[in-house]
Amino acid sequence: MAAAGPGSPPAVTDDIRELDTFLDAAYDAQERLTSGDLRRRAIAADLPAAALTRIDALPEGEYAQDEAAEALRAINV
Image (cartoon, rainbow, N blue to C red):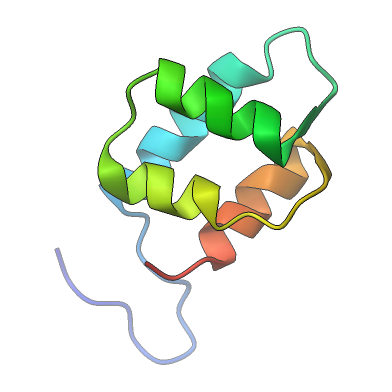
């Protein structure tokens, strides 16, 4: 896979794809979830360590799915 050039959006990684899939399942019939809810669901879903690290780094609060996805993408692991 080629690296993104200057001014290009970062390449979507497998971690991000996996987190998006997790969020789709976690937010099924839910409008907002707390960071604690997301952590518990991630552990129950047996996500890999890299994904759990991102979720653990979420600041405390309540998130809509799009807000959680954006916050998780902004976290560098």
